[in-house]
Image (cartoon, rainbow, N blue to C red; front, side, top):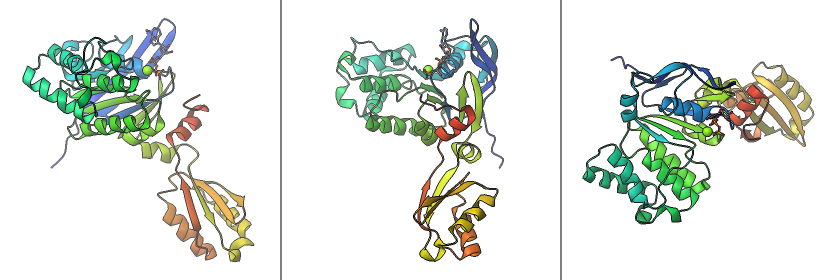
Length: 322
Ligand SMILES: Nc1ncnc2c1ncn2[C@@H]1O[C@H](COP(=O)(O)OP(=O)(O)OP(=O)(O)O)[C@@H](O)[C@H]1O
Ligand SMILES: [Mg+2]
């Protein structure tokens, strides 16, 4: 049987200008239905502006997009029924309880009260906030408010969900809770767009991702593809035995001549380090190669994987977080 991959979101030269500033510049993206798609970029890159256009909050200056086949400009009303949005700025009613805030959104979506009451408690439980359900959100910490904000985006069980920096300001433990929560939606064939400037988050959660800078998509692919294509490569370090110490420079020269190796150098003592794109995947190849050539077995092997931060640095010459 041929599996037809449905399109969740397709953008066509999507553009937003604010006066002379081009915040989002002719973005063409295709996101499969059921995919968790990451949007990684520094402050001011155009992530929120893109989300705001796709969620009908802002009108594009040029271009358009299809959300589950519905046109962004012509089918705004239908799109609003299909989507859930977790905005970057937390929007909560301080004088309502956590439960009441979530119920309010459910009522706006005309959900039957029994359904939304049960679902609210189920969602609060997943965020470890069930016990705090009846407390006023004005007494909540920033991290607790952020988690309620995330729940409000999904109470009506939308098919497409936009999470704009859902873990901003969360401690590592709460961040994990939110990551697990978001990952859970993948099982339900939900199309998810998540923005972040946290490269670990983008790497860990996204099935595919786009790196955006100055309103332009500068790279797109799976995290593995991007790290296998750009950046400084995986760094592999190993120790040679006394027997090989004298020929260490020959080994380094040999490694430097290999096209898949970006560089190789002497680390002092009896250690050698080299870098290769997708080095982790090719480690057994390198191991066999050195064994065959020098009868050398790499010892005390250490591998540091290329990160999306390295990819961003190579593409832009800047760090993600300045
Ligand atoms: N309403 C607006 N009026 C004028 N300029 C705007 C407006 N909204 C955004 N911008 C500008 O558009 C650019 C992109 O902003 P956007 O909020 O999309 O970035 P972002 O990638 O979400 O950044 P961050 O990581 O800081 O949230 C910025 O230069 C910003 O100043
Ligand atoms: Mg933003």
